[in-house]
Image (cartoon, rainbow, N blue to C red):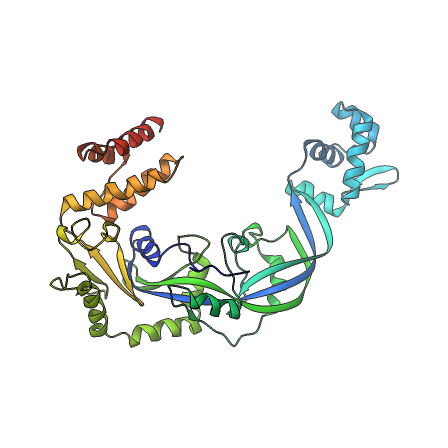
Length: 405
């Protein structure tokens, strides 16, 4: 598979915005990392589950709960044709749900378990599948990472190829830990099986081979409201933080050592110079970046600094600039400029979508509103702003959403 030129489907700024305005944390650094993943070819006996067909469910209920044990009894009780009942029972027997004892139909252990769980289970022998585990503690990845249309897991050669044409410099993480074979046996005890892309039951799993692949991540260092350092991991699977990979980054000492060393080596004077160079490149060197007590950098720019007259895109307002691992928050105190930014962003969002969900739009308005200093904003409030600004198309779309909601 040829890797994409850009490994992440969104820019670092989106992850930073989620941290700041979705999670309520203060982002201070962002890292682009390659997380090592064990790709394991597994052979096992698996039990798959599916919803019951109506007749299957009632026939098994009749056998267990009403102690019906023959085709005529079941056909009479459910007012069904005997040929139909016989055909359905033969199908259930082929699934290993039924057996005959002393002339009476009974459920097998698999059938009883299916009846109890209200899931029609089937057993497949010698199933082979590919499973993924993060390489530090051999914890399985969730279902989202099996979607090859969204997630790119790269070999070392593909990482090197991707780096040659990629805008982001991803740092390779490594571990001396081998794949922990006990992780296969532990699969049977996982409660949320669908979350981990697992069948209803997996027995006698055996590894046929393991190799390391790499998952691109953005990891944001941030401070929570209590002043504690947090690391939030963002992958290709979603533009919201992955709680399991975030926990891994926070708790694994090898990963924490890499991230902490980057933080220790980062000197405030060097960070300030980086921010000043960005401002100078836009003829804004008279505006100084300020480092707050929590370590985050910000700069307050005038309205004239933003497009169309200035050199800074409106999309930067309320958002962040990333230089290496350093982060600069861009602010503006001019209310009209912030209002124009809000309207422009929401107009672009709605224009790009033929259909939208009213609740999602309301949540996005509220979040971007907070980002730009407008708290408590809802679709009706934004419609009024759009009307006042002469953005009739946006106002009409918002009115339609408000009326349909």
